[in-house]
Length: 239
Image (cartoon, rainbow, N blue to C red):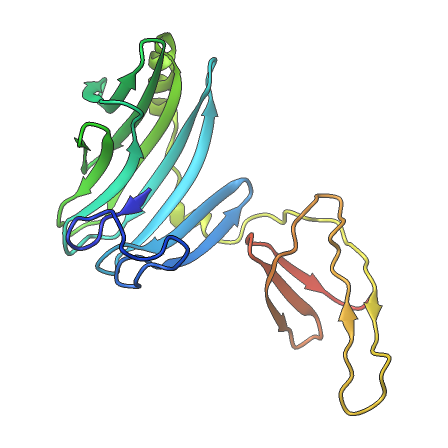
């Protein structure tokens, strides 16, 4: 999902491979806590947005969930939740706003609860609108596709999911990789004023953890700290 610019436009004139202007949106970071992930970014106007994805299995499919928390907007914000495959309609089922489209055999549905509003633009574009407010917004979205007979179960699963404290999930969680890994340090072979030592990253490890290193630092006790693009932080020391 994306946020419309300050004029309400979702389409960007910028290259799809390039970043958006920082006034429009800026990625802050990603936090991991157990099996939970929280993405943080800004919305137009500079407000902070936290986005927590999750999934609940159902008999025929799964409900993909998003819990979103946004600071009080100074201007009206519009969030593109989804594009329905065909012309849709909106109804309220037991307090949950449901946008659906159907081809006669299967149904695509967007489920919504929150203090803001869910609407359709152009018949297929599902949009969440956040009016100017003095207090933060929280809303939940659910995405489900399956046979028409399974929609009621998907709505029930969505309604039964309990929101999490996103600020709490951003705090350090339990250790994910609790077994020590030994690797080799290849010392420099060239003598002189500049010597290059090579630390062999453990690409092969018991958890198949990926080592896309995004930062390295050193602690006062001599340990090396390595962080990865996937949110892991490793500490290393001489064995």
